[in-house]
Image 1: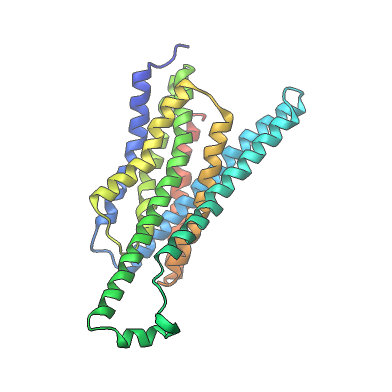
Image 2: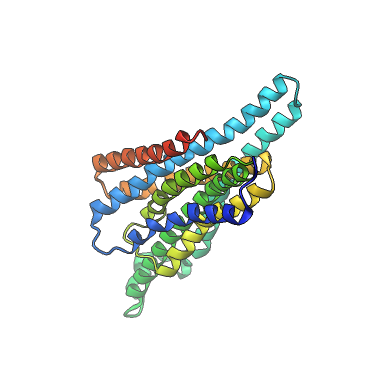
Length: 294
Protein backbone atom coordinates (compact mmCIF):
# COMPACT_ATOMS: atom_id res chain seq x y z
CA UNK A 1 0.00 0.00 0.00
CA UNK A 2 1.25 3.46 -0.87
CA UNK A 3 1.85 5.98 1.87
CA UNK A 4 -0.46 8.93 2.41
CA UNK A 5 1.16 12.11 0.99
CA UNK A 6 3.14 14.02 3.59
CA UNK A 7 1.09 17.21 3.14
CA UNK A 8 -2.20 15.45 3.82
CA UNK A 9 -0.66 13.64 6.77
CA UNK A 10 0.40 16.81 8.57
CA UNK A 11 -3.04 18.30 7.81
CA UNK A 12 -4.65 15.35 9.59
CA UNK A 13 -2.27 15.83 12.52
CA UNK A 14 -3.18 19.52 12.71
CA UNK A 15 -6.91 18.71 12.76
CA UNK A 16 -6.43 16.18 15.58
CA UNK A 17 -4.45 18.70 17.62
CA UNK A 18 -6.60 21.79 17.07
CA UNK A 19 -9.72 20.25 18.63
CA UNK A 20 -8.18 20.87 22.06
CA UNK A 21 -9.22 24.51 21.62
CA UNK A 22 -12.91 23.53 21.73
CA UNK A 23 -12.93 23.16 25.52
CA UNK A 24 -10.56 25.98 26.45
CA UNK A 25 -13.00 28.95 26.20
CA UNK A 26 -14.86 27.56 29.24
CA UNK A 27 -12.02 29.04 31.31
CA UNK A 28 -13.25 32.54 30.39
CA UNK A 29 -16.79 32.04 31.66
CA UNK A 30 -17.69 34.35 34.56
CA UNK A 31 -21.00 32.85 35.70
CA UNK A 32 -19.53 29.75 37.35
CA UNK A 33 -20.26 29.29 41.06
CA UNK A 34 -18.26 27.10 43.44
CA UNK A 35 -20.24 23.95 42.62
CA UNK A 36 -19.77 24.45 38.90
CA UNK A 37 -16.05 25.00 39.29
CA UNK A 38 -15.64 21.92 41.47
CA UNK A 39 -17.63 19.93 38.91
CA UNK A 40 -15.46 21.18 36.04
CA UNK A 41 -12.22 20.56 37.93
CA UNK A 42 -13.17 17.03 38.96
CA UNK A 43 -14.45 16.27 35.46
CA UNK A 44 -10.97 17.20 34.28
CA UNK A 45 -9.42 14.93 36.95
CA UNK A 46 -11.48 12.04 35.60
CA UNK A 47 -10.18 12.72 32.11
CA UNK A 48 -6.61 12.97 33.39
CA UNK A 49 -6.94 9.68 35.30
CA UNK A 50 -8.04 7.99 32.10
CA UNK A 51 -5.16 9.57 30.17
CA UNK A 52 -2.75 8.34 32.87
CA UNK A 53 -4.09 4.77 32.51
CA UNK A 54 -3.93 5.03 28.73
CA UNK A 55 -0.37 6.35 28.80
CA UNK A 56 0.71 3.68 31.27
CA UNK A 57 -0.83 0.90 29.20
CA UNK A 58 0.90 2.07 26.03
CA UNK A 59 4.26 2.43 27.77
CA UNK A 60 4.00 -1.00 29.39
CA UNK A 61 3.00 -2.54 26.04
CA UNK A 62 6.23 -1.27 24.46
CA UNK A 63 8.33 -2.92 27.18
CA UNK A 64 6.27 -6.11 27.07
CA UNK A 65 6.81 -6.37 23.32
CA UNK A 66 10.57 -6.11 23.85
CA UNK A 67 10.34 -8.69 26.68
CA UNK A 68 8.56 -11.17 24.38
CA UNK A 69 11.22 -10.56 21.75
CA UNK A 70 13.87 -11.39 24.38
CA UNK A 71 11.95 -14.54 25.34
CA UNK A 72 11.95 -15.65 21.70
CA UNK A 73 15.65 -14.89 21.31
CA UNK A 74 15.09 -11.88 19.03
CA UNK A 75 16.35 -9.30 21.51
CA UNK A 76 18.72 -8.98 24.46
CA UNK A 77 17.99 -8.58 28.15
CA UNK A 78 20.01 -5.35 28.10
CA UNK A 79 17.49 -3.93 25.63
CA UNK A 80 14.60 -4.75 27.96
CA UNK A 81 16.43 -3.34 30.98
CA UNK A 82 17.29 -0.21 29.03
CA UNK A 83 13.65 0.48 28.16
CA UNK A 84 12.60 -0.09 31.78
CA UNK A 85 15.30 2.30 32.98
CA UNK A 86 14.11 4.86 30.44
CA UNK A 87 10.55 4.46 31.75
CA UNK A 88 11.72 4.97 35.34
CA UNK A 89 13.81 8.03 34.54
CA UNK A 90 11.04 9.63 32.49
CA UNK A 91 8.38 8.96 35.12
CA UNK A 92 10.51 10.37 37.96
CA UNK A 93 11.42 13.40 35.87
CA UNK A 94 7.75 14.03 35.16
CA UNK A 95 6.56 13.69 38.76
CA UNK A 96 9.37 14.36 41.23
CA UNK A 97 11.13 16.75 38.85
CA UNK A 98 8.09 19.02 38.61
CA UNK A 99 7.57 18.87 42.38
CA UNK A 100 11.17 19.92 43.09
CA UNK A 101 11.03 22.72 40.53
CA UNK A 102 7.76 24.07 41.94
CA UNK A 103 9.11 23.96 45.52
CA UNK A 104 12.15 25.98 44.53
CA UNK A 105 10.02 28.54 42.73
CA UNK A 106 7.71 28.77 45.75
CA UNK A 107 10.65 29.38 48.10
CA UNK A 108 11.89 32.14 45.84
CA UNK A 109 8.49 33.86 46.05
CA UNK A 110 8.15 33.68 49.88
CA UNK A 111 8.46 37.18 51.45
CA UNK A 112 11.31 37.95 53.85
CA UNK A 113 10.50 37.50 57.58
CA UNK A 114 9.97 40.59 59.77
CA UNK A 115 13.06 42.38 61.07
CA UNK A 116 14.47 41.16 64.43
CA UNK A 117 12.27 38.08 64.42
CA UNK A 118 9.02 39.98 65.13
CA UNK A 119 5.72 38.28 64.45
CA UNK A 120 3.91 38.73 61.17
CA UNK A 121 0.90 40.18 63.03
CA UNK A 122 3.04 42.79 64.77
CA UNK A 123 4.67 43.69 61.50
CA UNK A 124 1.25 44.10 59.91
CA UNK A 125 0.05 46.38 62.74
CA UNK A 126 3.19 48.48 62.54
CA UNK A 127 3.06 48.73 58.79
CA UNK A 128 2.08 52.03 57.16
CA UNK A 129 -1.56 52.42 56.06
CA UNK A 130 -2.25 50.54 52.86
CA UNK A 131 0.63 48.08 53.28
CA UNK A 132 -1.63 45.27 54.51
CA UNK A 133 -3.95 45.62 51.54
CA UNK A 134 -0.94 45.48 49.24
CA UNK A 135 0.20 42.27 50.95
CA UNK A 136 -3.25 40.75 50.40
CA UNK A 137 -3.12 41.77 46.75
CA UNK A 138 0.33 40.19 46.43
CA UNK A 139 -0.97 36.96 47.94
CA UNK A 140 -3.89 36.94 45.52
CA UNK A 141 -1.53 37.54 42.62
CA UNK A 142 0.66 34.65 43.82
CA UNK A 143 -2.38 32.35 44.02
CA UNK A 144 -3.34 33.37 40.48
CA UNK A 145 0.16 32.62 39.19
CA UNK A 146 0.15 29.21 40.88
CA UNK A 147 -3.24 28.34 39.38
CA UNK A 148 -2.10 29.36 35.90
CA UNK A 149 1.17 27.45 36.37
CA UNK A 150 -0.77 24.32 37.34
CA UNK A 151 -3.00 24.70 34.30
CA UNK A 152 0.01 25.08 32.03
CA UNK A 153 1.59 21.99 33.62
CA UNK A 154 -1.56 20.08 32.71
CA UNK A 155 -1.23 21.38 29.14
CA UNK A 156 2.41 20.25 29.00
CA UNK A 157 1.57 16.77 30.33
CA UNK A 158 -1.26 16.44 27.82
CA UNK A 159 1.10 17.68 25.12
CA UNK A 160 3.57 14.88 25.87
CA UNK A 161 0.73 12.38 25.62
CA UNK A 162 -0.50 13.93 22.37
CA UNK A 163 2.98 13.80 20.86
CA UNK A 164 2.84 10.02 21.18
CA UNK A 165 -0.63 10.05 19.59
CA UNK A 166 0.80 12.07 16.70
CA UNK A 167 3.51 9.46 16.29
CA UNK A 168 0.79 6.82 15.80
CA UNK A 169 -0.90 8.92 13.12
CA UNK A 170 2.38 9.57 11.29
CA UNK A 171 3.50 5.94 11.38
CA UNK A 172 0.14 4.69 10.11
CA UNK A 173 0.12 7.18 7.24
CA UNK A 174 3.72 6.43 6.23
CA UNK A 175 3.14 2.66 6.12
CA UNK A 176 0.05 2.96 3.91
CA UNK A 177 -2.54 2.21 6.61
CA UNK A 178 -4.59 5.21 5.45
CA UNK A 179 -7.89 3.93 6.85
CA UNK A 180 -6.33 3.41 10.25
CA UNK A 181 -4.69 6.83 10.15
CA UNK A 182 -8.05 8.45 9.37
CA UNK A 183 -9.79 6.64 12.23
CA UNK A 184 -6.95 7.63 14.55
CA UNK A 185 -7.42 11.27 13.60
CA UNK A 186 -11.18 11.10 14.27
CA UNK A 187 -10.65 9.33 17.58
CA UNK A 188 -7.84 11.56 18.78
CA UNK A 189 -9.73 14.68 17.68
CA UNK A 190 -12.76 13.66 19.78
CA UNK A 191 -10.50 12.74 22.67
CA UNK A 192 -8.48 15.98 22.49
CA UNK A 193 -11.68 18.04 22.53
CA UNK A 194 -12.24 16.93 26.14
CA UNK A 195 -8.64 17.69 27.12
CA UNK A 196 -9.32 21.42 26.96
CA UNK A 197 -11.51 20.99 30.04
CA UNK A 198 -8.61 19.23 31.73
CA UNK A 199 -6.46 22.32 31.25
CA UNK A 200 -8.91 24.96 32.51
CA UNK A 201 -10.45 22.82 35.26
CA UNK A 202 -7.61 23.41 37.78
CA UNK A 203 -7.88 27.20 37.42
CA UNK A 204 -10.81 27.45 39.85
CA UNK A 205 -12.03 31.05 39.99
CA UNK A 206 -9.00 32.35 38.07
CA UNK A 207 -10.05 33.76 34.69
CA UNK A 208 -7.20 33.38 32.18
CA UNK A 209 -6.53 35.76 29.33
CA UNK A 210 -7.17 34.76 25.73
CA UNK A 211 -3.41 34.87 25.19
CA UNK A 212 -2.90 32.32 27.97
CA UNK A 213 -5.60 30.06 26.51
CA UNK A 214 -4.02 30.18 23.06
CA UNK A 215 -0.61 29.35 24.53
CA UNK A 216 -2.09 26.47 26.56
CA UNK A 217 -3.78 25.14 23.43
CA UNK A 218 -0.52 25.27 21.49
CA UNK A 219 1.37 23.54 24.32
CA UNK A 220 -1.29 20.83 24.69
CA UNK A 221 -2.39 20.32 21.09
CA UNK A 222 0.67 21.37 19.10
CA UNK A 223 2.65 18.18 19.92
CA UNK A 224 0.01 16.12 18.06
CA UNK A 225 1.00 17.98 14.89
CA UNK A 226 4.73 17.68 15.64
CA UNK A 227 4.40 14.00 16.53
CA UNK A 228 2.66 13.34 13.21
CA UNK A 229 5.62 14.80 11.33
CA UNK A 230 8.16 12.83 13.40
CA UNK A 231 6.15 9.60 13.13
CA UNK A 232 5.95 9.95 9.35
CA UNK A 233 9.74 10.26 9.12
CA UNK A 234 11.10 8.20 12.02
CA UNK A 235 9.93 5.22 14.09
CA UNK A 236 11.59 5.14 17.52
CA UNK A 237 10.36 2.96 20.41
CA UNK A 238 12.63 4.65 23.01
CA UNK A 239 11.43 8.11 21.96
CA UNK A 240 7.79 7.06 22.19
CA UNK A 241 8.34 5.38 25.57
CA UNK A 242 10.14 8.45 26.95
CA UNK A 243 7.22 10.72 26.11
CA UNK A 244 4.75 8.27 27.63
CA UNK A 245 6.82 8.12 30.83
CA UNK A 246 7.17 11.89 31.12
CA UNK A 247 3.45 12.35 30.54
CA UNK A 248 2.52 9.73 33.15
CA UNK A 249 4.76 11.29 35.79
CA UNK A 250 3.46 14.79 35.12
CA UNK A 251 -0.14 13.57 35.26
CA UNK A 252 0.41 12.04 38.71
CA UNK A 253 1.65 15.40 39.98
CA UNK A 254 -1.18 17.36 38.39
CA UNK A 255 -3.96 15.03 39.59
CA UNK A 256 -2.66 15.33 43.16
CA UNK A 257 -2.53 19.13 42.93
CA UNK A 258 -6.08 19.49 41.60
CA UNK A 259 -7.50 17.01 44.09
CA UNK A 260 -5.87 18.82 47.04
CA UNK A 261 -7.06 22.23 45.80
CA UNK A 262 -10.68 21.11 45.34
CA UNK A 263 -11.04 19.40 48.75
CA UNK A 264 -11.33 22.74 50.55
CA UNK A 265 -14.50 23.59 48.60
CA UNK A 266 -16.42 20.52 49.78
CA UNK A 267 -19.16 19.06 47.52
CA UNK A 268 -17.58 15.61 47.88
CA UNK A 269 -20.43 13.64 46.29
CA UNK A 270 -20.58 16.00 43.31
CA UNK A 271 -16.81 15.78 42.94
CA UNK A 272 -16.83 11.97 42.83
CA UNK A 273 -19.73 11.90 40.37
CA UNK A 274 -17.99 14.32 37.99
CA UNK A 275 -14.69 12.46 38.34
CA UNK A 276 -16.50 9.31 37.22
CA UNK A 277 -18.20 11.15 34.35
CA UNK A 278 -14.85 12.53 33.19
CA UNK A 279 -13.23 9.10 33.31
CA UNK A 280 -16.10 7.52 31.37
CA UNK A 281 -15.93 10.32 28.79
CA UNK A 282 -12.26 9.48 28.25
CA UNK A 283 -13.07 5.79 27.82
CA UNK A 284 -15.89 6.58 25.38
CA UNK A 285 -13.74 8.74 23.12
CA UNK A 286 -10.94 6.15 23.21
CA UNK A 287 -13.36 3.45 22.05
CA UNK A 288 -13.62 5.34 18.74
CA UNK A 289 -9.92 4.71 18.23
CA UNK A 290 -10.24 1.07 19.29
CA UNK A 291 -13.08 0.60 16.81
CA UNK A 292 -10.61 1.30 14.02
CA UNK A 293 -8.33 -1.46 15.25
CA UNK A 294 -5.66 0.85 16.71
